[in-house]
Image 1 (cartoon, rainbow, N blue to C red):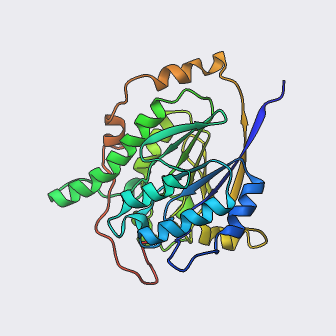
Image 2: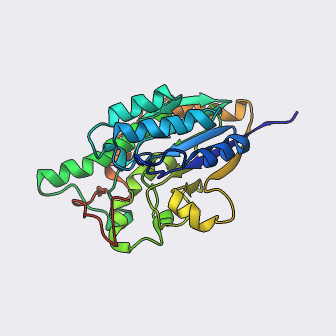
Image 3: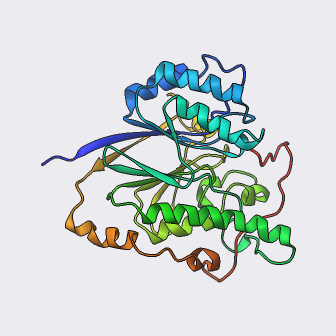
Length: 291
């Protein structure tokens, strides 16, 4: 008996502006013909303005008929109107996730924004000033949010989307001094603890398109500026074909594990009992960390 196949398209960092009317319709039309689901991985607007979100919503409704799942990125928070941006996109049929999940055609999708913090031994610890501790605990909270959402899933196929990267490999190519501002290995820990099919993120415009978690799960950087360079012969989005299989007895252990208690200590302590985090951001420039 054949398995259903679902084509999952993904792109991030659209950075829709007030003058983007008509810009995204060709891209969205192509995606509509090429995929069954679209994932939008943050920085959907340039400054988080309602006007930008309204233009993007019109682009979406004019060209896309497939389900759309999204997370917001740092740019979508810039104007302090992220809730309004989310509502505008929701009215256009976009499912915006922030620690929640949804199921489409037998696949579970989990979304979080993520946060900065750095990777591995070069990450900052939550030690010293309260401001540093609060900063680091922001990414811990995001990782816990991700873990709780994954733990509640029951489908064999689980797709995670976020804005920031959970691994270093997909930010390689960016200036090393801004790696701490592009993601955090704290976000990888839930992805190693629970079964996950694939992870999509954006943010790292000059990073690498692919990597893997320590447990071998594929991670795809789908920032549109990156895809415009690496797939210059076609529209800038990625499509992965996901075979959907029925929940079988062999999945019982994963399902049982997913209903167990989430253990925050796994995220707080990490590999060496040290927290990850980073300091305050820089401003725009050649090494722009806002992306």
